[in-house]
Length: 503
Image 1 (cartoon, rainbow, N blue to C red):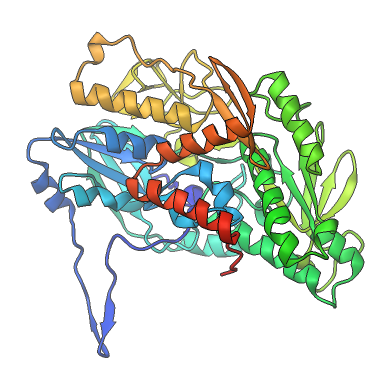
Image 2: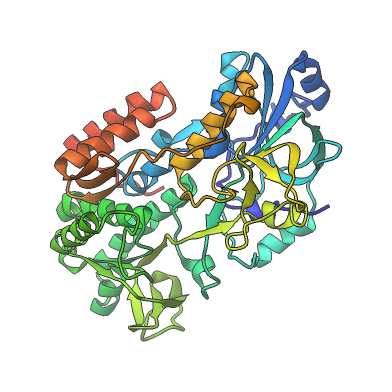
């Protein structure tokens, strides 16, 4: 059996969906599981069981759109919540609270006929018997970690691997693979260990804590001038929408809030965006991309293209062996040499999920370049012989529709999920031409209440684009709870400032 548990170890620890033993009044009571496979079978009641792997944009959207009256929906994911990723940059700097970017997967059960959920890793699958092997992941300490493209592990992770967790078999009628992808580090030395990523709420919390720590360290009378300048140098690697938006949010935090709280430090802050490409925001029109770069220059944010990162290590440039090494980091660039930084946020390409690379290897057809799962027009996974595997589908970043070059974005994943759910509900695959992507446009926040927006109908930049940017993300939020909370927090932070609590 091939294990992919360690490969999915990026998600933050969370509340258990299976109740552990609890202690009450100095006595221990073992509680049985609330839900077993036998009970799951009893609840099926003639419906097709559709097992969904993943709780991201593809898996979560699909499970919401699929009819529970005709399908028994079972979600398997190590992460018991959906993350509204466009809001992560805001949560990492206190513009929004973390809960506004989350949707609990188990909220489905509140509908009475909604999806069942198991918190676990997809470990193996038997396409012939239609059985998925799941490894429980309720309290896995490897969650919240980011693996490099070679799957290197720390000592603690190796110890976790030595202790195999319990597994169980889950039969399915149809299987939808939506396990997503992970941040590509290109095996750059030190990035996996010391960089800060922005793919989950755990990452956003870690960034916020580090960011505030940098200012507190810089404010100490024991901090030298050299260390102060290095620790207030914030670096972003990757000039895509995520890196650009986080840089913009950081700029707003510094000039709207930190300028009041640390007035003597703001003039020493530097924000730099590095990218290996000749320009940032390559998916935008040349005019909008230049507008974003000029806006960043006016805001004092440096953009350095055609730059290559060679290493990230703890310690200052002058004293890499200092006892307080993690106070500062050193970024080594091919073009500039070593640069002292307080934090390096890494936002580059995607690494294929090792469930695809290991458990599905040689049993499916994969894209030669990205190693993504190749599907036909009906989003059905293709076998090595180019024939579709019965009742097995793939959506999201881990899947590529053969013959297309759709971007690996939330928009594509959501459209695939909606289309596939509709086909399942209507059972009309034979009457359809197959999935077709409709480009609704791209947008990015660039700071100071300015944004850029590009659609088939035209291009918009500035304050109006920012209003549209906020409006779109507000309406796209999955629940009315968050649609109410998001503008409330926006209003609170506009009046009282951002939350800079460090916890």
